[in-house]
Length: 547
Image (cartoon, rainbow, N blue to C red; front, side, top):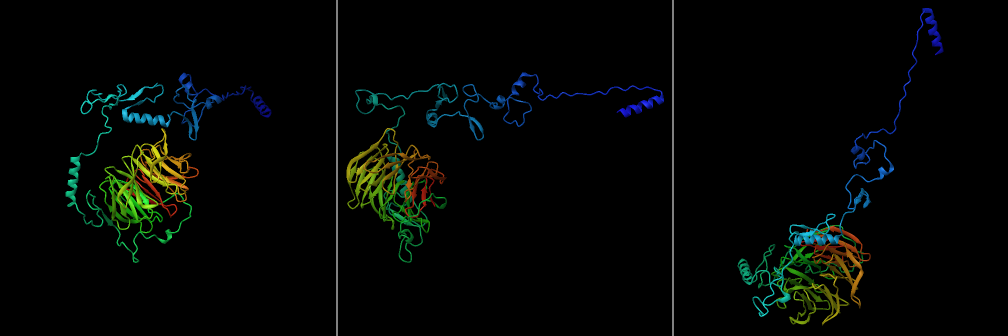
């Protein structure tokens, strides 16, 4: 710079002129590290202190308290947003729910009466529904005249029924309608005597006809003269392989129209499977080699509710709503005997394991009748229940048996002695319509109507095992038959949604579950010889075989 100044001075002197230069201007910039970008509007200033749920960038500084406050949203019942928040994997959530029992109670009330409690916050017990404002109590019928004992306007007193109550009244078709139906069916069939049934066609059975059977195979006997009753060699020895939960479907049969009621494996080998259904038919399937239907037994005019094999498997008994229990020959399909005690409907029938000539039948008129097949007469009656009999199970080396009923009780009997030796009943107890015996004979697993499989001890003190129960499935209202694996390690049962559940016997832990049917899975049976093979049946009319 000094050199340039001197050069300029010398140059100006030579020219005779003097020049003046302005001082350089230095500009200074002020950097604001926190600029005000909110503005002067109070609403903008208020909203700027919150972080939106979809905001990915913050363009201004915020305090630690502002960064830690909840996102913008509605307040809870106490006027705060973060008081009841729960941290979840996807963020935070506020618990706003009612317990399962209260929800089901209000849902049933709304479905039946059209009203329910208002679940809104601050409703304070208000009711909602179409009839909430004019809810009425049920009215009782007139008490009648105290001077009239019978007939119209008879005295009812405090026992008068409610208006519209049909309890105790007969329902269903009248005698004239029933006679017209039977006459029409007889005309359709052509005659009331036995008929020749063509292969592949099964007609309905009409009361009064002879029982018949239909063989579905090509030959009833093989080249050695053996029928399907012959036990395969590989199934004669006991299999000690540990049972596991089935994982794949082996075969499916469209067995019955209107639904399947029950399925049973033949005792011992298990190479044959027996089924009964709502169409009044009983069918036999080969589940070992051919995997096809072998025979149909036609002999019931109404739905068949239950079936049971004799201990040797040569015969079985079927119980139907047509008031008959019939004993059939498994091999030939012939009906050997008809059992009917009055007009009562037989709900369940069991052969006495030590004497195949003795059959116990549980009926809808609260009685258990013991039949002597050779004399074709009732030799004993067990009459202590207050409702229809649902199941009969022998235990303690077949010296005792337990019966369950719609009266929500279980009664233990000595075989041949019509005196109850143990009564299991409790006000909180639910009905147990289906029971399975553990392979060791020390336990009973019963399907309770409160969505549980309960366990009872069969020792000297018949009692419930309160620390062992199996939960998770929904069976309320359906008598889903449970089953236990031959090694006693796995419990299997269907549910009301068509699913199949498997539990560990020791820990009560769920081992597996899968969707098997479109409707309620009413029955499950475990193969007695082949490990990990299970058959299930449903009200959709199908039978499925799993392994």
